Image (cartoon, rainbow, N blue to C red; front, side, top):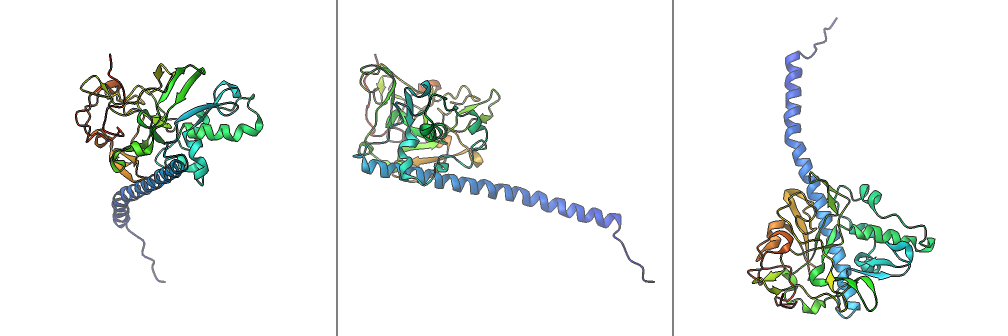
Length: 308
């Protein structure tokens, strides 16, 4: 009878060691490939959002879409008597799917985002609840508009009375569209230990505001609005806060953010690269020391008034 030879223990250990070594080599490669695929998809989504924005501006005399406005019976808050409509809903007719509002790099784009989105009020007519859903998803879009320059939100406005009123810049005001930031990947909130949660945010704040301490580069609030809405600026002194980067967020490998320029091009940048020409301080109080390098201002000039 022929004897069957089995593997020895040493041979089995050698095979297991080889498999472990191959796994150690290949798993990081697979992880990087997956991360790069998500980053590429995020770049594509950002590009589609901007193409929709540019189509909108062509139809509306080169005006940028406003970040948010109030409209009866649509959206949150106030149960459907005076709700909101926002940026992503405005450009939605130029897009194939609202799924493009979400970044594949955001781990909560489909689960907790939905759970924490505002629930439609029972007083909102059933026929308008799809708009409510669009509002909820658009509110937490992962691509935040550079709102202080492109669509400042006035607060506590009068004549007529409104909690907010948005202005809009003309795209023709932009001095250098290829190097002016229109939008960037964003975040909704973070836990006390810094973990992101809740999705993104539809608007973000720029890293700096003033030149030489008194010259305000942010456009003034719309007429009748004594103040503006903002995220509190960039706050590098609070590293675990949601607005450490003014609401912007690097969702991708090596802390990369996806940055959309006003000409429609998309760049992959570290957060530090987006602050060129600006000395970042808490509450965006640092000074712009080189307006030609600063990537957030639209025309390289004083847009606001002297601060008293």
